[in-house]
Image (cartoon, rainbow, N blue to C red; front, top):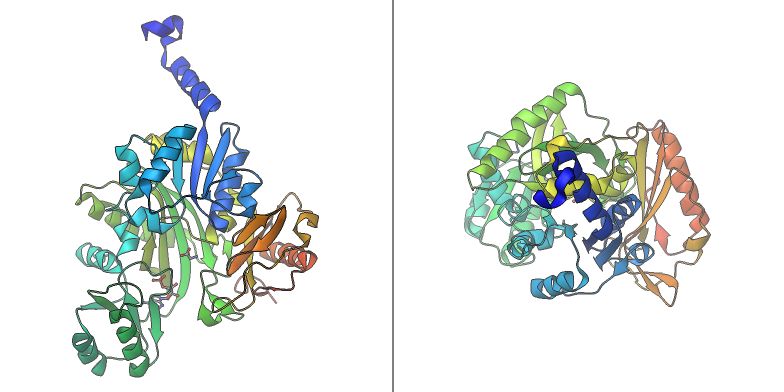
Length: 445
Ligand code: AMP
Ligand code: GLY
């Protein structure tokens, strides 16, 4: 304090701190999808952020950040790069590094990182961990059983009703969930999981099928304060009318049509608050984004699953609605100061359409040139986020099932969808397909 003489009052110190991060703020983002491109774009708008590195990023992030190929399973390699480039903060997009404990590792090395630690990440890393938490804290969720081997599961399947849901316990890139109409389907699911399709399976989860409408509910926390971070509705099935196979998400709109004050209160008191309390039992405070996948039945919320990150494509749908500075919000989470940080939103609605490679979610070709992308003129309320894209000799090629995200803001969902469709038409990528009916529950046909 003596050092700063007359600047020693708190306001001035705060100013000096701001100046420090203004001069030096270099950020790293882990991930390569549409979610990460949208996070990167939002941070890039912040006056405070000087430089962004993406590990490994995509062709979209390459325009505004430096993409770095690094082995994300080797945390030491990442740490060395962070020190070398004087990166001041790391934001973790996907679940795998979180579940693998990247936050614990970086914090141990005094590196600022936004995301939950290894224990908190069990909320997504183990469905059984979450179910047990639900049981203990009476959090509403589908009735369930945990089975240790094929025989136990099979005995249960002989006497139960269908449909039901069979789930692998651990991370399965969104593929370890089987909705089973009959016993044969359930037996196949149980066999596949125990045979190791999603890694070694010590246990299996079988749960009641909940009939309702899904909502993605987002929060952000610094470990002491938890704030809402909007809602969205994803469209997981590959075909129009919610038919066909499950995907990572074919599009979303925000806010969810289901939310009302009464439901919001129930979600907080019956689901979120008891979860945070439950984690404290493990001496664990939750820092990062938290995504509750909910089934809403007659205005009552049931927890289907937790994700310890933003959703994809929900993140791309929600961030363009954010009025406040994303860097300020995330930085305040890292310094335990979220309670003093305002999170403000634009009043417009948002809708995101995902352009996929033909064949997705099964087999599809990679390395298909995306020719017209530079010719697309985005309006003030339009966004094009890259997902599975790569730049080679200044040309952009596909390299994934979900390739591009078109997002539009408007007063009405119908206007959002019209804009996104017209952008996709302008792009006219012959290898692409998309669901034209995103938002069909909120848009009159
Ligand atoms: P999850 O990976 O747990 O989100 O499951 C993937 C999808 O399966 C969810 O988004 C739901 O559409 C569906 N699902 C999972 N559990 C249930 C359940 N108990 N009842 C109905 N649908 C479910
Ligand atoms: N949109 C689903 C997910 O991110 O898991």
